[in-house]
Image (cartoon, rainbow, N blue to C red; front, side, top):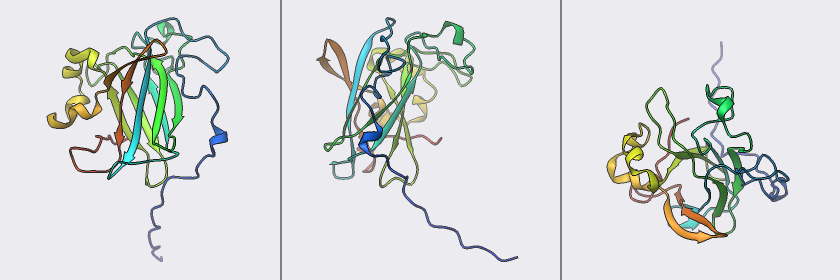
Length: 200
């Protein structure tokens, strides 16, 4: 039996043209662009920039967000509380970065929930995909509103204390009558700069 040489690694692809995305893809508060947004919970804007080492912006990166509704429930069969989930909340969306590396999601401030690993603080899961990445990068966004719950979250506690603040969003005033939270993602850099990522 002959042995085959391992194939080389390649960056994530193929890449989608901007025409693949439509207005409203980054809005988790409604089931589709023509639907009414959910009336439950607090709608917020999550904004930030994706950069690489040296602070250079990452253009045309794809970000996917998924989260629980305002009561900490998922409209998914794997959630035992699915019948109580917000039927008007999609809980998933996709954004892409502009020339400055900027992105934005319109979503709900999520609720916490019980998990086999322990009580989860309110959070949003983010995936980043794009040129220069060998595989998708996964991180989690926590919110400063829930300091007590954050302190007990089993996932946040996996991150060494000096770096935990890197995955807590920063309040940044208001826009469109909504609270804005900033969450910058640094794909490469030293320990003080780089965003903590998790294995999938």
